[in-house]
Image (cartoon, rainbow, N blue to C red; front, side, top):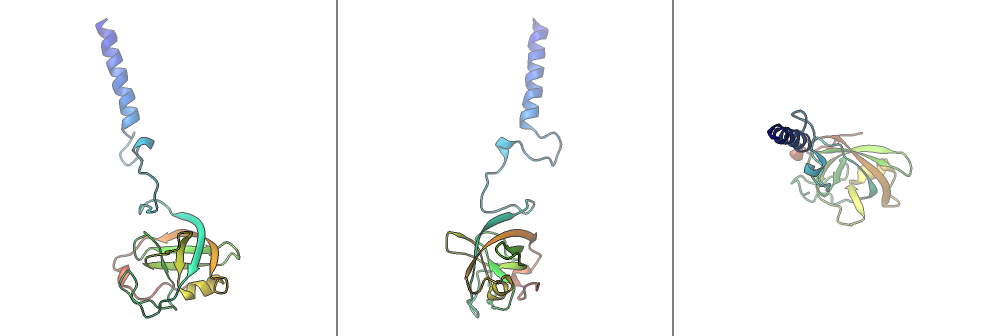
Length: 155
């Protein structure tokens, strides 16, 4: 009878360890421990989102990152990604794509996922319509000092 209690305790400990602890260090947490989905992807998780993009031009105005907006830079406004994050933006209506650098906050229209600079909008061929269905994908995380870098990466 004592051995049955010991065996039951050992089985319970093994089951608990399998459910609660990852099998190896660095393994993702069990589903009940995972972070809830949100608008802010972690630095290690890939970002891929589809929605509407618009373009804006406040040339000469200060962006949320502190740099001055330049319509000729390949930049964008995103609600939550770190400044300096590079995103690949693809216009799903015509297949054109560009790389932009996040340096501002927005868009403020709830049905949009990104605002791009005028230069990016021209390259995406969305100037006339003002809005396009796009897919954004993280191209690179922010680099040290990227928020203060005045130039976007040309495409």
